[in-house]
Image 1: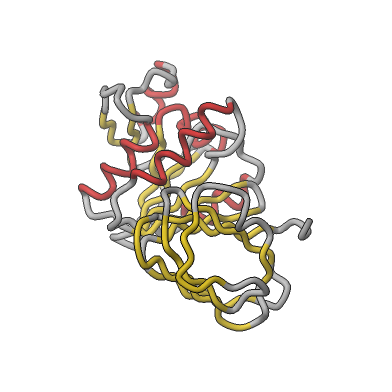
Image 2: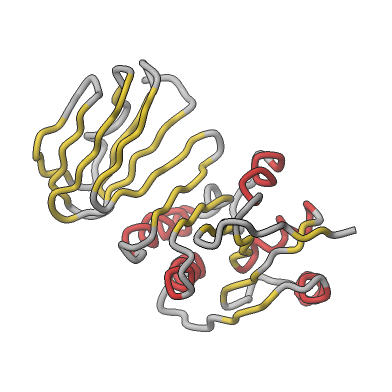
Length: 219
């Protein structure tokens, strides 16, 4: 029997894409308290979990008729976004901004074709600045920052910083801080370390930038 997720936070949405899903239990936790959104072929993950999403978005070219009928029978709203000028994930984020769901969590966006993976980073770069976006990548998590991000981190936490677009940034509370430095999309910000306590990231100009907190080793 399929179940529906109870929506509690009127600003939060969880977008489930069609990439690799490594932890079903973690996804179920993420879905609690937010609008559950299947991004095109991401509907297959919901069906595997027997959870009916609140919303199905995309051009729907990767959605089987059987899966769509299952979702609609369970009360899922379907919004077709046929434009081919941007990816389904990009269209989904723009739609979330349009309906006021400004706290966006993205899951199952990793893996698959290299061009699709690069398109994810492009979608994060182009998404409306009004969106507060986190993306779960296996055991790692990415946080998009357009202006300022302050986090409490344990000493030794591995974090990496990537400019989705050229940006002038400051970073403090880490082993290798930055002070109003211009960064581009490169490997320069790979594998920094939190010193313990608050880590502050400020984007003074340009951006956005992506901070990735990793569960792996610092190498």
